[in-house]
Image 1 (cartoon, rainbow, N blue to C red):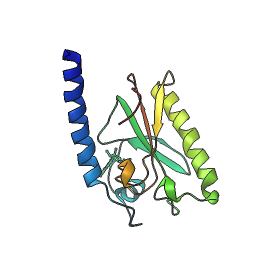
Image 2 (image 1 turned 90 degrees about the vertical axis):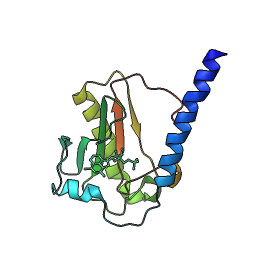
Image 3 (image 1 turned 135 degrees about the horizontal axis):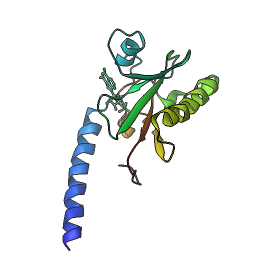
Image 4 (image 1 turned 30 degrees about the horizontal axis):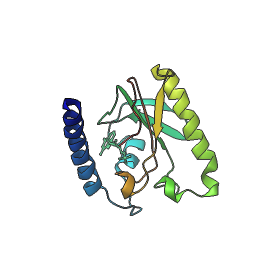
Amino acid sequence: INSGRIMSSSSAINDEEASARAAAATADTGAPTIFDKIIAKEIPSSIVYEDEKVLAFRDINPQAPVHVLIIPKSRDGLTELGKAEQRHGEILGHLLYAAKIIAEKEGILDGFRVVINTGPMACQSVYHLHLHVLGGRQMKWPPG
Ligand code: TR5
């Protein structure tokens, strides 16, 4: 009974957080985002990996001991995964392989999660495609 009460109260908090994120989530407008400024190094970020095509930096609001975002340097219409076209296949593969390189550098190859939120229903908040690489703690399933 107690554990049932604890579970329902913690799921109420999660629901509240989820509702707040969902309410704040907006749809893609195609406008430039804060990530353009990070790519241009106009605003600082904690860069963990960079090559000619992608940039990876630490999330400002980490959800795990390791929480890195990987973005294409050229957005090229890829505001979100849901807008991907066949021509984006190469960069999508490059981003995913970069996730493995970063996981290796961060020492989380024993288990890590790669997340892409796409669209308001998934609470996407920045419309420049990005992969979240999360690790350094035991992950749970299902995600919220
Ligand atoms: O919700 P989605 O999947 O769109 O993820 C966007 C992520 O960008 C969130 O996890 C934010 O915490 C992260 N974010 C937002 C900003 C930001 C950032 N990560 C690093 N540096 C940031 N700056 C400087 N500014 C942001 N607005």
